[in-house]
Image 1 (cartoon, one colour):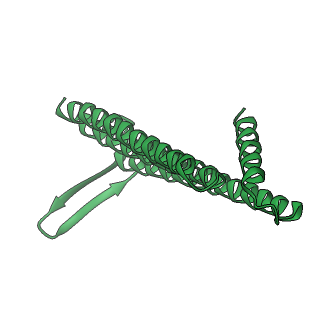
Image 2 (image 1 turned 120 degrees about the vertical axis):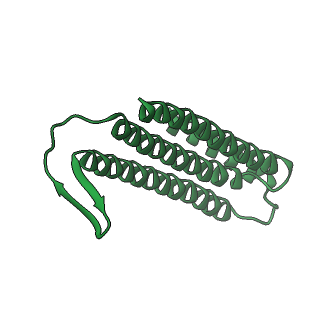
Length: 171
């Protein structure tokens, strides 16, 4: 479905490009501009997918690390830190659950921001296919507004999750 929207947007952009072209432009120039615009959007989409995949991978690694740390016991003395790593009992304290929840909240925030920034790059590339002027400016402004909203939403979800993690730690 997203590809259909992209193709529709590119078709509309191509139509605008054709009408905006000066009469001396050849069909080859127009076709080349369309190919370049399609290439730019495709590259932005690919980069977006890679960025989101990396954010998800980082989140998975963070969650694995905190889970392993919850099974580690240790004490701090005056000479430094000593501890043993093992499978533990599998029982997590409220503090451990809170730490896991905080890590998960940060990971979900990072993923949401990566997705928002990826969508912003694609939307900006699509906007760049429009003829210069008010329409292009409006499309860019809309992309910027959507990015800011997505970041604010992600921040609100993270704050809520961190508050819940704090409650877990106090139990």
